[in-house]
Image (tube, rainbow, N blue to C red; front, side):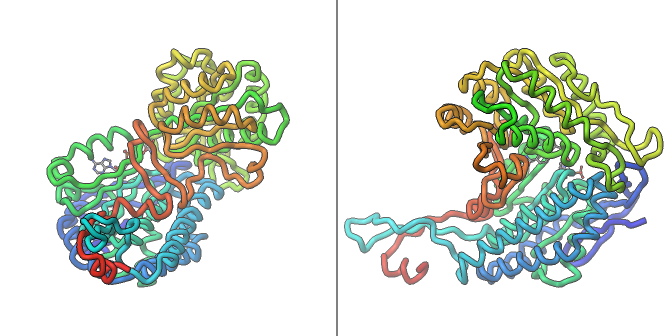
Length: 517
Ligand code: NAP
């Protein structure tokens, strides 16, 4: 069995002591093990700061972009092996695995392109120079430079490939070395990706390190030039925000946490229309892709009261066709959730929802999966619930059930009513609104925008091109206020801001021009 190693200080190291087993969530077989006990985390940080940082800062944006392009190509060339590992360790169907792995290479390629566009420079100007003296001779210019520490990336279990790549793309292009830590339970894919990068020798020493398991005392050694970017649960986020090192040394921290993403069907959307088809497709896709374990997945679905029974029938029909089982079987459309604790959590969430909702499809998730021995695997079937009074509901608006579970709820058809229900999620990554009525959209967009990092407006005109609200794009912001963690990743050039210091430089105009033009 493979024992995963960490890559620090330019070498692969194994942790001491008893290793933690990593499972195939469909069969419960152990597929790998890992330990990070005894790893010199302080040394890993020092090496990245003192070796990786200078080497990256010596490169221009265009050169760092080329490095990202090489990473994207390596992932693409190792795609088949990575897909097989994602099926075995992540419970991914082939489609789920491609979503993660192709998303990783696409994000790296997008940041590679950005590096090419920025070109052969090392310091970015932020805006034009500003006159600050009596005459135009005395000016100020904002610039951005890479922070001189390490970007520590802590990722969730659901996107081992994309999680590593999307954070690393922005940090490395900005010029900061990275230490990446996947969630231990599904670390096999990220570990293999790291192996491919190292074997191909495309990264400067110390530019990218990898922790294959627990973070040990890593975070206690962070200092004021370091960055901590975290994706995971709100509870862990709170622990990390409260670390002495983070508070005392003002460590820059970005959090992507829980989100009760809403979808709203506009009253104008006709039954059988393209927009309705998009809405139904997106809801079912988000419930079932990656067994609902997407931070951007639709959890709450608001439908005009008059349309509810037709929507219930249409969703039931579509969910009925989803075959659940071992994703190694190609006919399977939805695999298990990733871990036994995730399964417990989802079951508990469904039980809590049942106090405020009635079953529409899938009961409480009991299922007989195909292709696995009886009683094996962390399976839960798609579950659709109906909440008659969403304004009074607490669990529906408060508890993110991180699995193939969504709740339908009626509203009057008024955009203000829909907006007030959507806002009960207290801050989300994305909300989607399906309508072809510009007046309706003109009312709801400003009413919910401040509560989200991204709004997806589903309409007949874009339906054929859309990958749904659950797909995060490198060029658009990923993150959200409030419950979603208050963070912001990606969004093209903006995604580098976390890794850069913005500095105002005042001086003689010709000097500033000579330094920065
Ligand atoms: P989690 O338990 O918070 O774990 C997330 C990561 O944090 C893992 O890598 C974990 O490592 C690490 N971690 C946990 N405690 C830590 C500590 N004290 N110090 C350092 N690292 C620590 O979350 P999860 O169960 O993996 O993820 C599920 C949740 O993440 C869901 O609720 C979902 O909402 C959220 N999520 C959000 C997004 C987003 O983009 N907003 C994306 C995906 C998931 P180990 O695995 O080694 O314990």
